[in-house]
Amino acid sequence: MTDILKLIKDKDPVEKEFHQAVEEVLVSVQPVLDRNPQYRQEAVLERITEPERTIIFRVPWMDDQGQVQVNRGFRIQMNSAIGPYKGGLRFHPSVTLSILKFLAFEQVFKNALTTLAMGGGKGGSDFDPKGKSDNEVMRFCQSFMTELFRHIGPNTDVPAGDIGVGAREIGYLFGTYKKLHNEFTGVLTGKSLGWGGSLIRPEATGYGSVYFAAEMLATKNETLEGKTCLVSGAGNVSQYTVEKIIELGGKVVTLSDSSGYIYDEEGIDSGKLDFVKRLKNIKRGRMHEYIDKYSEAVYTEADSSLDHNPLWDHKADCAFPSATENEINQKDATNLMNNGVKLVCEGANMPSAPEAINIFLDKKILYAPGKASNAGGVAVSGLEMAQNSMRLSWPAEEVDQRLKIIMKNIHQTCLDAASEYGTPGNYMAGANIAGFTKVVNAMLDQGLV
Ligand code: NDP
Ligand code: 2IT
Image (cartoon, rainbow, N blue to C red; front, side, top):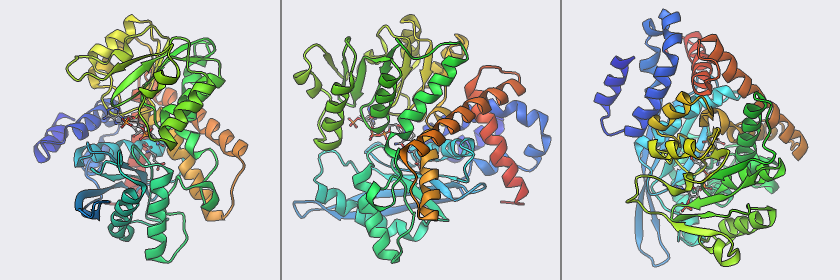
């Protein structure tokens, strides 16, 4: 195990996030490797940690002042053992090859857990949509797709949204793909409803995360009713996490963006949530505007000189980190424990640093790793692909029901795999083991791939 990690670190020394994601999986699957020596003989670790294909390209576009701008575009086609590459596109200035490789690696196992036929991939750009006009975003998306289109397709690679990529960006990307290929096809998911999108896709990641949390609580004969919850982020995942928590009787007291967070002790009710949706999705405003409307809340500006994030330092029962990677460090995890948090359900990808995860596992709280708990988004993307193939669209209740069943099954799969390999109740180990085993067995069936 350590030899392969060393190999990866030596080969790509700067890819810290990728190393972090790989190490977590390698540690979890050690008992599987011990029980199945052929996996090492067949070099599955060397294979599974090397992307099948990495595409890096120039994205030139013109801003509203007529100035040429150049960004870098990426698509990591990580693994296609169980289906076409599938995974989101992220537009954010922090995007690097390391970030996208970690996301693509996680996506492989996440997609396997959904039980749908989807391989894993991820892509994006260091382009920052924040502060750009719609026209600038459109010109960027058109340029991005002018290269990406030759590498993707409904049976090859099906991108979707992630940070900074929502319905608006998917629309511009789809329009360009359609024009270049002269083909109306389900090549992207997260499309708008009028032209091939699926009902419940916008809600799916957040709802799925809360369904997973409810499943975890049910193992302790508990529910979300009356529980106080901390949610980070204020984007797609966070908004629908809040919506479902409210529906199930919980109280959400925080939301954030990269500039700061709000604490609303009275709870964010559905009226306040509607305000946040309008603020973020239509006005594209900032979280501090919340206190202009709701003066009972407190806004705290982000302060990178602090060794912790004060959002995680409030009395609560549950935490739903739903913004970005490594947003909970060791100190934050300690603060969560000291404040009574008994459940951490990851809406974001890899939001908890390894030291934080160790604290959750030591304290034996209910801890759900993102690749299990946020799989509802890509699962409904898989259902969108199925509907596109059949040229049908299912009613919201049907998609939601399927989502619920998928999340329930993922929860059970994690518990079963964890128990089988001697770590009962460890959802992280269970998710990694179950995802890994499925993908690796498919690879071995297909020969030297
Ligand atoms: P959005 O772009 O809709 O929202 C992201 C939110 O997180 C914003 O509030 C943003 O604040 C904040 N944020 C982003 N980057 C940072 C950062 N570096 N530091 C602090 N805050 C940050 O993205 P999503 O809601 O779609 O994604 C959130 C997380 O969920 C990501 O980890 C993503 O990979 C994961 N995810 C998303 C899925 C989906 O279907 N969309 C599916 C599964 C996982 P600001 O506006 O200031 O940038
Ligand atoms: O991280 C993720 O699972 C996503 N951003 C959603 C991917 C998808 O293909 O729907």
